[in-house]
Length: 301
Image 1: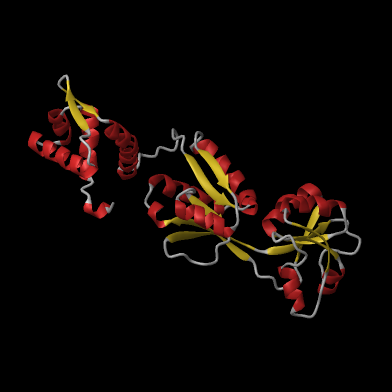
Image 2 (image 1 turned 90 degrees about the horizontal axis):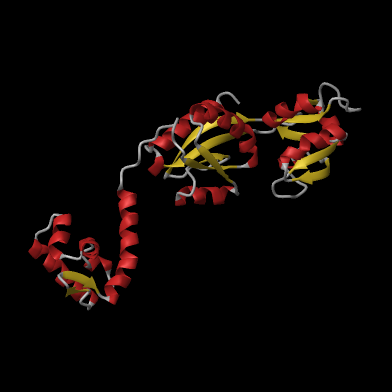
């Protein structure tokens, strides 16, 4: 059946007839005259090849076909009505809205604690659901409307996404403060001769540092590789390994675990963390409010 050839207003008339069980009252409900409603019913009967309603005791009784049809049509009409309804007003102090945010564990580590602290004071009933996954999965969730926004490393622009730079990150070297062979600075020779701990999301033994070293015909000794950056500071505090970490993570753990942070002797390029949202959400009050909170927090981390 070709929907382009069907007057979908007939489904609205059908729904009214199922509710009122009388042609006149169904027409009044829709602002239609009795003849117009009867004409719509005749067209429905022609379309479905069924009587749909029969008179009994002064009312219209639905046929089995009508009952089955209503089970499909009424939820669909309800969904359409919800989709076209104006967005409800958003009041942060009283809202119990659940925001779905795409984040990596690194972005969670940096942004989630201050975000939750801020929400506790200005929107105590708002809830946050963090959605994880690789870059492609998070962008797919954004496009499907399953998440409200995403924060992370997304270097490529997408025409139907808007974005906001949150902060820039750089890499530093980290080791325990009493490391026997590394002082307050670290040379390139000391760096390549040390034993390294690598954070690799690909779960291999090669990272961006190794690619940079290869340009100078140098290698390093990676003793441990892990995809989990949060375990790295504790390992460094108990061993003579060194690691190349993002500075915000290093700063958080250095005073707690007696670690020292050193400039990296390699010209490593940092990265930028962006917030992205679908253009269809740009003017949604709740989404704009959350974006403003996250943007403000990002200036303090």
